[in-house]
Amino acid sequence: MDVQTWTWILVGLTFSLYIGVAIWSRAGSTKDFYVAGGGVPSVANGMATAADWMSAASFISMAGIISFAGRDGSVYLMGWTGGYVLLALLLAPYLRRFGKFTVPDFIGDRYYSGWARFVALLCAIFVSFTYVAGQMRGVGIVFSRMLFGDMDTVLGMTPINAGVVIGMVVVLFYAVLGGMKGITYTQVAQYCVLIFAFMVPAIFLSIQMAGTPIPQLGFGGGNEGGYLLDQLDGLSKELGFAAYTEGQKSTTDVFFITAALMCGTAGLPHVIVRFYTVKKASAARSSALWALLFIAILYTTAPAISVFARTNLLKTVDNASYAEVPEWFKKWENVDLIQFDDKNGDGRIQYTGPNAAAMGLPANELTIDKDIMVLANPEIARLPNWVVALVAAGGLAAALSTAAGLLLVISTSVAHDMVKKTIAPIIGMQLTERGELIWARCAAAVAVVIAGYFGIKPPAFVAEVVAFAFGLAAASFFPAIILGIFSKRTTTAGAVSGMVAGLVFTASYIIWFKFISPQSNVEANWWLGISPEGIGTLGMVLNFVVAVLVSIATPRPPQEIRDLVDRVRLPRAAFGEEDSGPVDH
Image (cartoon, rainbow, N blue to C red):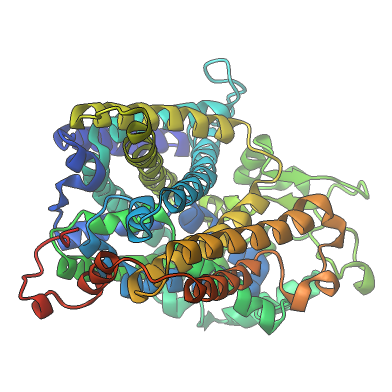
């Protein structure tokens, strides 16, 4: 069978599985909708957390970024993995013991302030929408190339847009029907699909290119031509690119970008909420360890995929005749994710880097979207059609799992934090559990439509907004949560002042270099040599400093808040209690 037929079969089977699980585990209460009833087993929660964490960015984009950026791309690998470790060790168990459904709920109650809750609510919604729009676009890319083939239109729309709409319908069904309960068990299935889809081609390629079935060893090994990394360095230099294993970024910038990614991702609300779905704090710790194991399988394989894909790509397209390029090249070209411009009219592909002119090489004629590397990799290596289709199903699983988690954060933030905790008390409205559930489902439906719109019509600055989102989370959520857990002295004024200072500083820096004066976005103009992608780290430090200084200058928090911090942070045995649920507050 051809790739398209295999893809329809595998995607159809996996989508049927997701919908079936959602029907089986549909939510019947707000606790089911928000935190899956609080009774998910640790191993299952670890799988669901891993699926929630490993979005289309992890499955599709990360290996593509590393393929093109080489060593510099490792900041994403280190930052995202380190962010999860920070989350698991510093935040998850304590937030679970606090017992609230959302991050704005924690910040609002810990800092006894509606303003703090409102700032956290806006941040949660902004960060979540940024990511969910990217996931929907990833769904559209997979559908357009793998399922719709050479079709010019589908349902009166372009293939990418039709793919986004189909993804919207599927996510809407199990997110609105099942809530966190349906999403959790669906994400368990999606993790199994995505990790199998990622590892199978990696193992095939490792055997093919390095003679070992272990990709983590294969990309550091070699074949009769020598070590793979040495081969890739040589190919890269010959074509005017920098050596793959040599970074172009300064050590300072690498540190700040990695730290911003770590602290930003540790504060992402859609992953934090996963630790409320287990029975007690000890289960949150064990599920965090399980999730780290499940995440490590993909994250330690991604560098290998990057090396295999980059090596095969350079060998395939360098100086190849355009009339004789493989079928996969033309198919990706049809959806504008590969573009060939024959500048010298010789009918051959000149794929050269920024140093081409100095080396006397022709100007570059090939533009490749980084996001296609994982999806195109099996075809480039001429693996079986079912493997190509399997990767498409895995990419959809990764995108849909994270999209569902993000949509749930948006819906719970609107229903629980905005309507129930903010608007209802002001207008004197009594919101029942059934009413809150209706608000949550309506908010999820609206959020799916908005996310789909941005997936169909992404702003031209999507890549910049992603950097902004990480900086925003690092400069706002992370310090507020850390101080809320570990400092009894932090006051409302301190927390809010710190969040505002961090946000304003980080946003101003990124907006200036990314939007107002992009031509000045060069290292010589950066403050202390820190790029906009890494400035969130400095914003985070500013947040901490302002929060501490303002807290010292203002009256201590009430005694009940200080007691609450003790009960969240200290072992329950110190109070003669069992570790069986949230603290009483």
